[in-house]
Amino acid sequence: MDARIRVLPSAGLTAAEWSTLTELCVAAFNEPWDDYWENIGPGVHVLAEDIQRGIVAHAAMPIAPPRLRIRLNNPEACLSRAGASPPRVRVTAGGTASC
Image: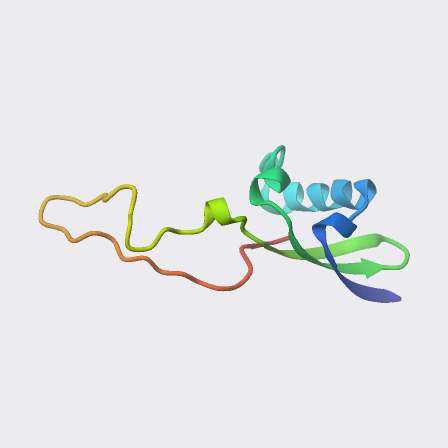
């Protein structure tokens, strides 16, 4: 098998590559993928490609725009039941979805 790995920003993907990635993600998650790419914003993509078959695997790490950053110490809502303490914020670094 002749294969390669490419790492590139969202802006470096062609329309055909976006289409292939969308097909892969729809198949992986079994749900519509209509506006997903626009909603997560730009990111870094890792593509595994077979020379004969094209893109066969994909992973991405979105780069969240400033408007989506979590405002710590200033929650917009406190969802707690009677007698419960407010939820703690946990931040995890790493990939959010792979397909």
